[in-house]
Amino acid sequence: MKISVLKERRPGETRVAATPETVKKLIGLGHTVTVEGGAGTVAGFLDAAFTEAGASIAGSAAEAAKGADIVFKVRRPEPGEIGALPDGAALIALMEPFAYPAEELAALNAKNIAALSMEFTPRITRAQSMDALSSQSNLAGYRAVIEGAQIYGRAMPMMMTAAGTVAPAKVFIMGAGVAGLQAIATARRLGAVVTANDVRPAAKEQVASLGAKFIAVEDDEFKAAETSGGYAKEMSPEYQAKQAALTASHIAKQDIVVTTALIPGRPAPVLITEEMVRSMKPGSVIVDMAVSQGGNCPLSKADEIVDVGGVKVAGFSNLPARLPADASSLYAKNLLAFLPLITAEGGALTLDTEDEVVVAMLLTRNGATVSERLK
Image (cartoon, rainbow, N blue to C red; front, side):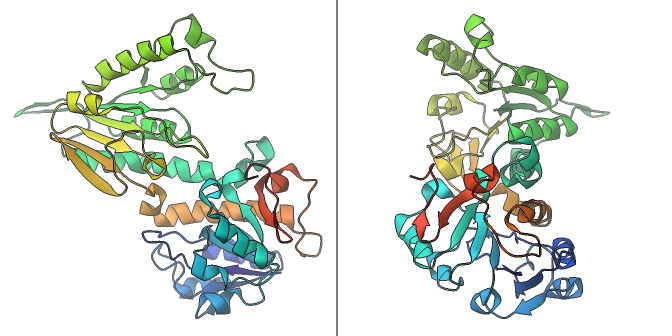
């Protein structure tokens, strides 16, 4: 098959969907690879490295995509890019499916594009190596703490010097998913005193294993707040009020707060109110990782640092793009791991509608929108 790798055109997007390492492996599997010129430059992967790995370099997106069976991208194609895609090709990218404009889906269907969304990779054991949300969230959690430490402008660890002692920073991580756990680990490595919370009781043990303290109202309702499948139950208004009071009093004492709560297809839940922000001491920092979906703090703005009475509220809409080489490498490996599921013996493209992973990820096929989640 011919696999094409297109350059990202979204402002601020520095990642690329293949690396010289994965190109070499794709060619080893019998595929041909064409990379649009300059696709990996910002991430540190020059055209010469792709050429050395065996790829062809094309001068434009249209030239790169011509005759492609599969097109790899990091982000979904912009409206102007859809025209460059070959009719009937498979497109694999982070498609942002719940925010996909209907007219753009129609444009994909008009060209019979089989669009597969990496966000819809199911959370099952055999799909772990394909899980791009996890690979990118892991890096985002790390980078959120690094950004917060830089904005904070003070030392993170305790320092005892002849001139006096520097107190360690107090860091509060809200949410202990993939991003949150990496944020906890990073803040701990930097020497901060770290606390964290989560709505799932099982997260308490994970937080403690990283050396952080778990903050929650641990009553009988909290202990039964998880389904047999490991998902959080909706809590009563009474419990929510008690937890909010505890969180508010805790946030007021923190130096850096990182919020990580995202709900697919819905606005991000508000975790930090304006009142909580104003209760923090000047010089404190909030890093809102959910700003692209409205934010966990109503004061955050995408890709801006808002000063609220001396408290800095930072919203970063694309933290993985601030680590382009590693983010590209992990994402490219996610794509490489997924490829065998849509490749028949002999290398031809096949979309097995009996495979639960493929079915979950398919958005469009044969001119129609087929994803049940989008319907």
